[in-house]
Amino acid sequence: QVQLQESGPGLVKPSETLSLTCTVSGYSISSGYYWGWIRQSPGKGLEWLESVYHTGTTYYNPSLESRVTTSVDTSSNQFSLKLSSVTAADTAVYYCARGGYTFHYFDYWGQGTLVTVSS
Amino acid sequence: EIVLTQSPATLSVSPGERATLSCRASQSVSSNLAWYQQKPGQAPRLFIYGASTRATGIPARFSGSGSGTEFTLTISSLQSEDFALYYCQQYNNWPRTFGQGTKVDIK
Image 1 (tube, one colour):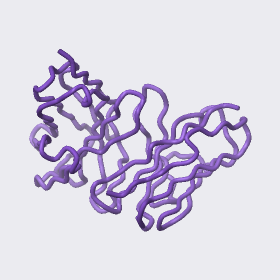
Image 2 (spheres, one colour; image 1 turned 135 degrees about the horizontal axis):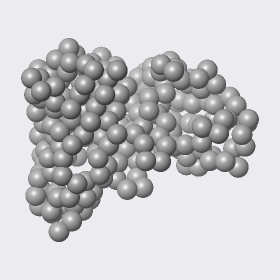
Image 3 (cartoon, rainbow over the protein chains, first blue to last red; image 1 turned 90 degrees about the horizontal axis):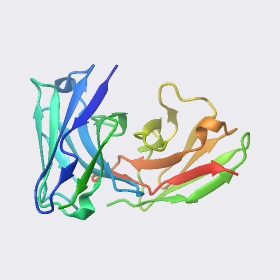
């Protein structure tokens, strides 16, 4: 059973960097698939942020590309998201999910973690 | 960026009735479209991929159709557990994009 679990601070100050980690169990992230981040602002829809392959190949949402970095740690079976210079508009529930290599829909999701940007 | 427009925003349906949700893409996405269900406080759950293939464990009352720019999710006979938000997502082009969602609520 593939499971994903987000972790990281629930509160980040404006202008600082949001850092989240997704721990995957039940599947080795180096075996394939893309691993992505999607967020959902309060009362709003879903926004895809980025997807990373275990080799490091990454696709970013252009709307956030200048502020987003990602990394993969295959030894820990984790991948991470960093979003710099955050503002209140970055307050959202952040989900990690598994995306297909060829067909990039998301078949497994973490439960999500709420990150609030506030001083 | 491909924009997905879902309609209606809210669909009020009685249990046992049929529900039809629409997703329109601003340009062709072939059959590279997925549907997700989301309930309050939960992560989205994959329901349909490839425009018409049900994901594992999804009941047969859910069906997807369409290709190109016009897609439909049909729930043949609504059950109480089907009242939720539904999102479409295209994976034909980067960036991946989602529709704004259709809420199916009880009439």
